Image 1 (cartoon, rainbow, N blue to C red):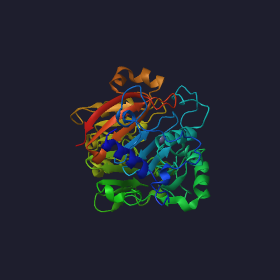
Image 2 (image 1 turned 90 degrees about the vertical axis):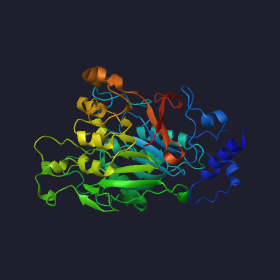
Image 3 (image 1 turned 45 degrees about the vertical axis):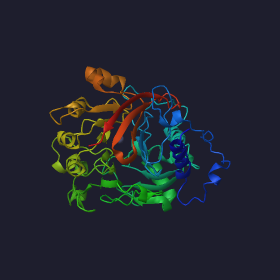
Length: 425
Ligand SMILES: [Zn+2]
């Protein structure tokens, strides 16, 4: 074993302590407390540290790396980010969508023996296997729909969530402007049960989600809160402006800002690498409504080009407008799918259109429903992956990254495919 490798191993062990933990370097090697979802810390071999080869398990996160895990449960969005210093962030954890077994849905994975929140917790614990105590430093909820929050209470029961940000705290009175979802009450109860960890997500800011362990070590890493409740960052300082009209509350119920339009979104930047994710904001609102219902256009104006974008609203037909596509120009598109609406045929056309932006791009989906396969047909063959967990692994400094697809039918973490390396622009 080389000295460099030993150093890397030491960094992983030392760098994996929670902030404020009294664990010393010596005690890190002492016997560990029992962790319900975890095997004991493995002895990492050179092979597990470096190999990202098909058929073998995903190598562990290493200090300096940014990992974006898009976790497929078949029941909604769920992304877990491990930031370069080991700070962890969950962005949405859904348990909703089409009724289980509906031909409009996709299969629940790995299977229906556990709720999605527990599957996500088990996944989180596996990728935090080098932490002394697995925990989620930040959870961000894009908006109050069950395919985004439904799994959060269950997830928090198994893996502690230290800070929870959402767009509405502490007022959940008039969240939807029409239409409520049955599980909303469950989330509100979850939030109010532990008010000390709740924070209202404020667009424009870069200090609500921060590196907690070694902030000084990664000065070119930043999480920008882009928008929420129709307030969109302007690109200058922390200033925002409202996309919603001042008289919104006085509009007929059907014309008021709705829950999707009120979503929160972020941009994660690491050197030249940028990742965008923004809940369910629309960019092609239903016919006849005012232009301000298009949230994607002002968002695209401040986000600019990114390396990787999670498609808004799961790639639903009201999202991913031409301006958004031609402005973000992602090298990789990620589709978080739970319905036969995901993606819309036209949406996929726009994502793939070289008239909207030149150059190569790849599209990965967590799944594609059999119904949508029939409707869209051969265009879906252009996806480089149509099933599995998707891991974007960004190397130290953000200059290069890979897309790694993991088996989602079991908990092996086995790699199904590796794409890249891609170069950040
Ligand atoms: Zn959704």
